[in-house]
Length: 369
Image (cartoon, rainbow, N blue to C red; front, side, top):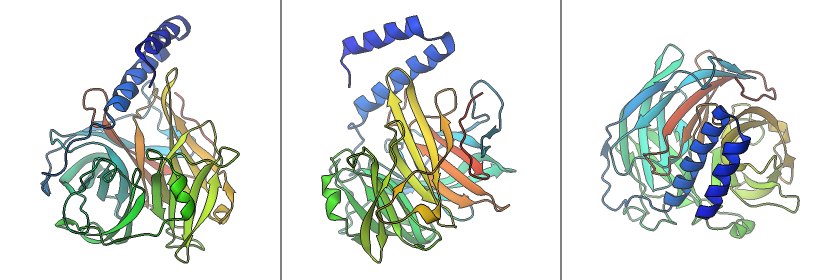
C-alpha cells in the first residue's frame, strides 16, 4: 500500500486533472479500497461463532447506474440488487456464492471462515430481499472452527449435489490453498469430509494469491469436472492460470490477461461454458469489475482461453469489491448471474451488496450511462 505522501500526490493529481463527478468517485474509491486493504487481515475471531439465525437489514438497489436509469448493459439485463448489513461480528467478507436451481436458496462463504445461508425474495423478476438467514463457522474434520487466518480464508463455494437443505459442497481456500468437501443440511455445514488433490504447480501460488475462483461444470464434455483459478499465478506471457480436473487429475489452462484484472470467481452454465468474474483496483481510477464468458468448446487442458467481455463497470455503477458469482437459470429459461461483494469487514466505507443480471446472447459490452 502506498505511504501517506503517495496519498497526497494522488489527491492533488485528482483535484487538478479529473472532472467533479469522476473525482468524487475516484476519491471515494481510494478511501474505500485503502481502508479495506488496511483491514483485510483484521478479521473477527471465529472460535466462539455458534450456528444460528442472523439478523439482516436488506435495502433494494433500484438502479445499477448511478447516473441513469438504464436497464440493459450490452447483453446483460439488470434484475436488481440488495445492500445487506448486520451487526453480527462475523457478518462480512463474503467472497464466494452459490445458488440453488430455484434462484432463491443461497450459500455464501467468507474469508473470515464463516458460511451464510438464506433465501432471496423477488418482486416479480426483481430482487426484493433476503429471508431466513443463518450463519455458522467452517469446521475442520474434528469439528472445531478454523482458527488461523491463513486456514479460514474461504474464497469460493460450489454446490456439487442436492442443495442447501441436503447436499454436498466444495469450498476453495486461498492462503493455505486447498479445496475441501462438506455436507450441508438445514442444520448447517458439516466438518470437512475430505480434500481434492491439487496439482503440483499450485505450490507456486503465493500465500495471498491462491485459489480465488472455483466451480463445478454444469454441462458439456467435462460435466461434473471442477474448475479452479488462482488470483495471481502467471505464465511467461502474464496470462492467468487455472486447472480443470478431468478423470480426477488436474490439468492446467491459461486465461488471457486483459488489463491486469484479478480473477475473483467463476461460474458454469448448463452448456458447459463458463463466466469469469474479474476485479481491478488502481489508485487513480478506483475499483472496477468485469464479466467474461468462455464457450464450452474452448475449455481444454493446455488451452489459452479468452472469451467475450459481457460487462465492464466502475464506480459510476453500483459496484463494490465484487468477489462471488453464482450462475443459474431463471424461470423463463434465461441465464441469471448473481454477484456478491466482500466488504473486507469494513462496515464504515464498504458495503455487502448482491447484484443480479439476466444474460442474453454473448456480446462484448461496457456499462456506461
